[in-house]
Every structure is written in structure tokens, then in C-alpha cells.
Length: 224
Image (tube, rainbow, N blue to C red; front, side, top):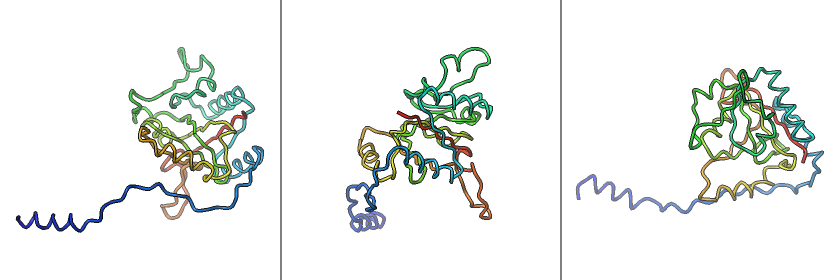
């Protein structure tokens, strides 16, 4: 055995066996207050507004579509990025993306990849979170493809759309659901917690929006 092998042998023998990974547990918290949807909506809106995000409520998907069309008109959005989702076809009129001079929708490349150069020219993404957390104004987004992940980061604006029934008071209430997906070996992806627009104060402690993600965040919650 040469000196290299001897050293490696000693390193291996001194290594502590790595135990099986354990999922983290959340610390105990006060009892949930079983708030009604009206109070949850109020808390979520206040929390998101405090973070300079904007929360809008719709009675149904038709009104949600009208809100989205108004936002598109006010902000001059001509191109959109999103992933396939049942709500997508309900939010946009059938002829919105068809014909000469119409808007354009980018759903990513084959196998869930994304063209970053193409996405960089798109002003807004439409994202569909799995959960909404009232206490912090947070949207929990399950991303299973590269394109879904990029939608959370690369566009200057992000519109997150979901149902009021997906709204919960605290993260602890949805933790079991998040862990169930995380334990599934067939699932490839990650959760992203979107809590208002991207914000940093790294440079001379001056708060700047939009450095690491969208500068403008809108949440549309549809009553169901």
C-alpha cells in the first residue's frame, strides 16, 4: 500500500456513516384559529400589500379574466409566459392569442425546458400556486420543470392565480401536503415560496425591487 492509499484508507475509516435523510419538522405553534374565508382574505391582502404586492379578488373566473385583461392593458403586456394549467384556458378569451397582431403565449420548450433568451423578452408570467399563506402573504408554488421555475424569476412582473379555497392561515397548515409531495420519489421539482416582489438591500442598505426576481407581483384569488 503506497502513501496515497494509506491516507485514503484512514480518511474512509474515520468517516461517520451518513444516516438516512430525515424531513424537517416545524416547531410547535399556537392553535389555529379556524378563520373564515373572509378573514383569511383580509389578512392575506394586508400582508401582501405591506410587501408592495397587489391582491385582487374575483367572484368567478370570468371576473378574474377581466381583471387580467385590464392589467395587461394598463401595463402594455403583449407577450405572456406560463405553464399548462386547467385555469389558463378560462382566464384568456379564446381568440386572445390567435391571429395577426394578437398577443403571444410562451409555454416553454419540449420536455419542460425553457429558452432563457426568449423568456427574457417576455414582460409577465402567469403562475398557479398550490397554496396561499395569509399570515405572510406568501404563495407556495410547486415547480416540476425548468420552465415553471424560470417563470417565478425571470419576468419583470408575475401574476399568481388561484382559488380562495387554497388560502390557509399559516405555513404549518399546508406542511403535510408539501412533505407528501417531497417524499414522492417520482416527483422532480421544488417548491418556491413567493412572498411579494423580489427585494434586496445589499447595496448601501438601500431597498431595491426586482433584482433577483419580479419587480411587480399581483395575486388574483377567485371565489369558489
